[in-house]
Amino acid sequence: MEANKKAIWGWAIYDWANSVYVTTVVAGFFPVFFKEFWSADANVNVSTAQLGFANSIASLLVAIMAPVLGAIADKGSARKKFLIFFAYLGVLMAAGLFLIQEGRWGMAIFVYVMGIIGFSGANVFYDSLLPSVAGEDNIDRISSLGFSLGYLGGGILLLINVMMVKFPPAFGLLDAGEAVRYSFLTVAVWWGLFTVITIFWLPEAKVSAHSKTAGNYVVAGFKQLANTFKKIRHLKMVFLFLLAYWLYIDGVDTIIRMAVDYGLSLGFDSNDLIAALLIVQFVGFPAALVYGVLGERWGARKSIYLAIGIYMLITIGGTMMTQKYHFYILAVAIALVQGGIQALSRSYYSRFIPKGQAAEYYGFYNMLGKFAVIFGPILMGVVGLIARRILMPPSPTPEQVTAVGQLAARWSIASILILFLLGAILFYFVDEEKGKKQAALLSAE
Image 1 (cartoon, rainbow, N blue to C red):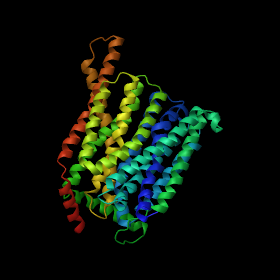
Image 2 (tube, one colour; image 1 turned 30 degrees about the horizontal axis):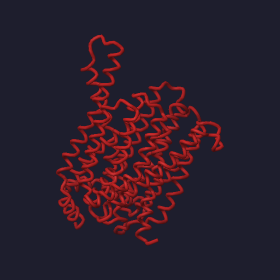
Image 3 (cartoon, one colour; image 1 turned 60 degrees about the vertical axis):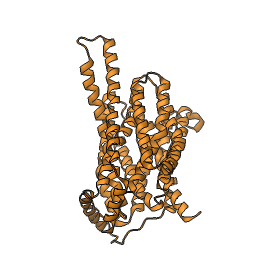
Image 4 (spheres, rainbow, N blue to C red; image 1 turned 180 degrees about the vertical axis):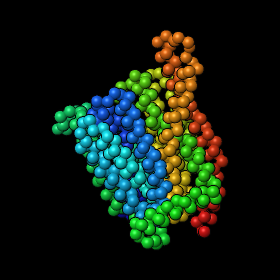
């Protein structure tokens, strides 16, 4: 295989490897299994709070760590090594979920949080290696290739895991509970084995030589982190893009995180939700590839705008959803643009990064992505509470309480439009040519 093609596939296959953690563990089985197995003795509100705190702690730790890790990797020329370290930390934690016994909710949370740190920490370095395997003419397509393989790999293993849970005897398992535990083990095996391809095929992108001691990595990394805040003042397009990205990706992530809860509120059962998740995975695979080609031919900027527009229509459609088939239609619509907007945002950002500092800047990029998942749900919650108070009549009947609650929920979903609208407005003022010139000037210093 040609060296450059080998490096590209070595990079892209890691998305195939690690996406199974998100689909099977984070989005699929962990939330349900946590309530029914590890935290079975707690009431539903307590277990929800426990899981919520776990997600918040993990997101906060990753957000704080991301720019530091990126700066350390840039100074040490060790991006691939850091990717491997965090990837196998995640692999170990996914396997650890298989071993945790019933009622051990504290241990389950710890292992889950460490797994997210492994997954997200590795992605800092995975993203930062993209410019080393792609040129400006094909970076959009290669970024989309990674996301598309992630959708396909995650969907295939999730489908296998769903079959394990539905038909345990066919897989030599006793019941659905044992099938879920073995599903966590399959995630570890899948993630660990396919990462080996990345290890052998993806070369490390070398930067200027530095001392190779761990202490020097850390000291240099923290110094670089402090310098980054100063540099961003001179990279106005980076700052503007990151602010726009933070707003519109907050809308994307909020829809992803809140879709299941909203579906449950409409009376959908777990089978409906798993089916919708599988739809997103398998439709998202070719859609991300197509979106990568669209980004090359039509331009990443226009393609990102198209995705934002479609997400605005999805949000509006969500406020009017009343039937089960509406949920599936919106799932298909999300799948068509979800991977595209993520992939093109990642590759578009690379145009503004000074040479030799990719991990550092992608550290901030990933940090914003982690913080974004906090504010969208808060916005929905506040709007829903305000709408409920405004709309609720004095001495309401039970029927009125239900009707007002549903209407307030629709108002809260509509509030996400603010994030997409503000993100689109700020993105309008991002000048790609100015961004490239600013990055080139900083690289030359």
